[in-house]
Length: 223
Image 1 (cartoon, helix red, strand yellow):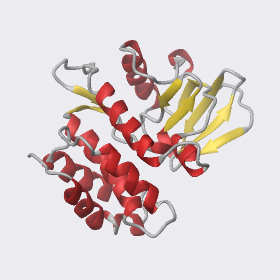
Image 2 (cartoon, one colour):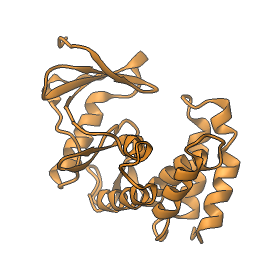
Image 3 (cartoon, rainbow, N blue to C red):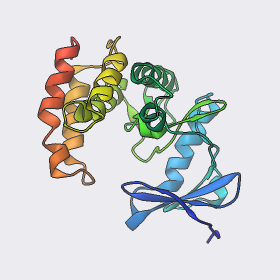
């Protein structure tokens, strides 16, 4: 097992530890996900020019993923401290989704790689540009689902009563400024998956109905 240093951060299902100045270890709790398989997906999209951290697959396991250490705030942190306008953040998310969906699938060239958790806290703003992290939920499929997941995540915040509700609504509007890639089927499946997500609280799942209505009010969906 790799020797790690201080805890750098913690999410809903994983913790990130320092290895050295160039690398970190993300350790999944309670066997959540498959870190090595996630790393393979990251290396695949990186080979097509998509902005993700480097991965040391040889040192990664089902629970541990060894990643390039990134320096810079997350997109969410930049919005909170006023360094990034929420609308600009939403437009950047849209660009990252479109760029990702230009990457062919690993198992089927007809499918697209989907991140399925692309939101402002999973984008790190480095000196070299944005890098997308946390590929735990990644799979291959139709881009409409990926757009639906990002839209629902933002909409859940936008319809809530937290201070971020206003900025989240601005991000959502910019994300969906060109909503041609979001489909009715993708939105419906995104809502279903969010409702079934075991890491979400009852309060969060209770916002899904209003979140779906907000998205439908902003866009005209095709099936």
